[in-house]
Image 1 (cartoon, rainbow, N blue to C red):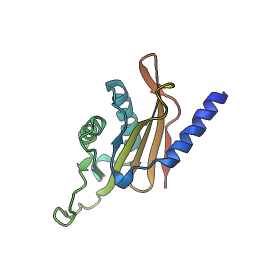
Image 2: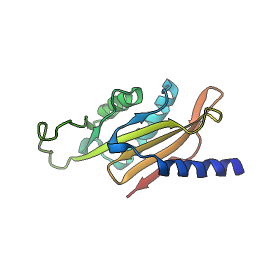
Image 3: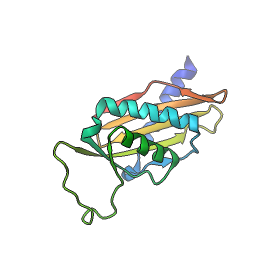
Image 4: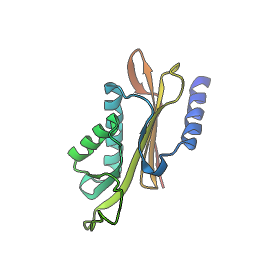
Length: 154
């Protein structure tokens, strides 16, 4: 019980220290296929419950990272609009469609420890007011959620 409480306190402390700088996604660890599938499933479920696909366009700069590319494809298949952050907004300015919301999307995926506990953290930020956080643990070669999916709406 004490161990679980200490993990939860550590979880909140770490999330208060990291933020996706300028909405650029970061993968500090190499993503295994099993973990990637689990992460995408959790992200998709959270986004679908909070942002309607046909009315949401994400500005998503994933820099060609494995998880970023897979998430990009999954979001497009569900009907979300995806655009990479343009280098010069004036050159690529477009008139937004009526009723479509444009939001910046970024994530951080990083280990929480020195692989002794096998903990990995995911933090996904959408716009300025929506964020999900979750810990995952690798045990016996398989990843599972190490805590609840924490959701923050502003």
